[in-house]
Length: 252
Image (tube, rainbow, N blue to C red; front, side):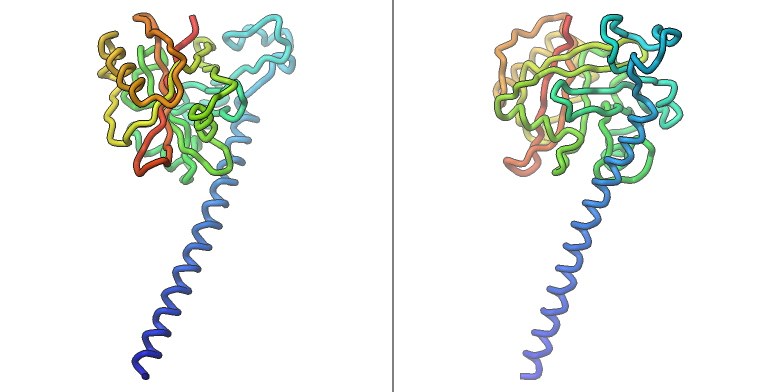
């Protein structure tokens, strides 16, 4: 009898500790999600400008300026460099949920768990594959987490349905350009894709054919040799260890 009471008490303690841990983990995740939102709001305040706020003397300081758009977004890469020298571009989705700097680290692990500022954060950053040389590569991989509060790359899941907005704007020091989704696919997280392996059109066609077999969204687009591909990659949870790849093609 005494032994049974001891076991029951041990189980109660273990259960209580487990519940405390789960509550703490939930609170900590929510704290880091809010922290991430605050970090990127400050980055926006520093690095994003509007044409109407710049004045006539600054009109040429921002590449890609539309003279007819008095409220066009302009990215101040000089200001962003003071935050991180790893920032290589800025990505904005047409539907508005994605609006972040893109960084490139020394590997594909660091920015999974660090904000652009270098601060450790579970939400991480939007980052380009470290094996990409520049935003001019024929195929680029850009990664980001799915966050329950709808931030980072969470809105890419709309491509598993019937998205109304399929375009993105990429801002760089040299120019701004548009890219449009032509295909979205759900694949195993074990799928190995090294952007360096896709410098030839034949290899890019092979990847395109592979993704079409696993497509959850397909426009029927016919890939062209001079197409520059930008793949946006995030997690998806229909099965264990899966990835959603949103393939976009730069508008010509």
